[in-house]
Image 1 (cartoon, rainbow, N blue to C red):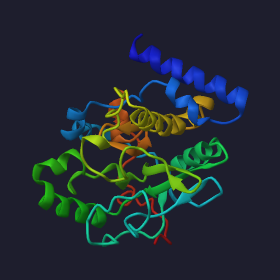
Image 2: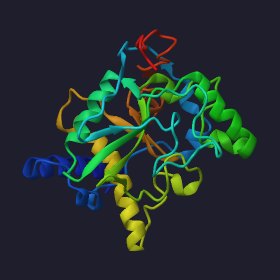
Image 3: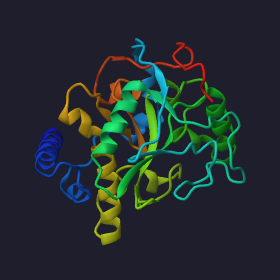
Length: 276
């Protein structure tokens, strides 16, 4: 079976399951294909930054908490279970926002996806729009620690990151208030954090990790699968917790599109006046 056929089969299974059960069950992931992302080499070389951007104007809004959708700005406060402090020895990154902000279209996707979770599950959103100061602080400090390896994981300040668009998000799944086992913590760096690291799993624990990674990716794709009015999302190869709208440069490149629709939200004047 080709990758395209496998992806189509997963979409069909999701539609049929939700029609019959009314929600997105956690045991469905074992029957889904791995999410489609670009190759790691393309990601580390940042080839997508060559794509032209024609800004769509979708506004950045504050993402509000609800019963199924929880926010916790991890760079404002890294002291939460399931978060790997990206800069050891500090609880807050200078310039971080206290609240989570995303493009309105992404907020719609997150709210709809969260509503499809079974009763004991929630989405925990940890980062959305990221100010340039935060991106610079993260990159410079990690470059000191990692050298050139930093380019595999963090966008340099002179090439605006997907988070600068407000159309990208870092998140995980909570079960009874605690993060499920994704095989590592959010913002952990290394091969274990790579999205497809556990795809060849044989051990039951590793198979469970594989399935949770598939589940998160496909859950966020489901609003678009069920309704064409919702935007699709894509993941990236090096971070299992990161997803973004398909019309960012990363998303457009992954889908072989020539133009992206989400640019730098700050420089395009799309941030709310009361952002904090």
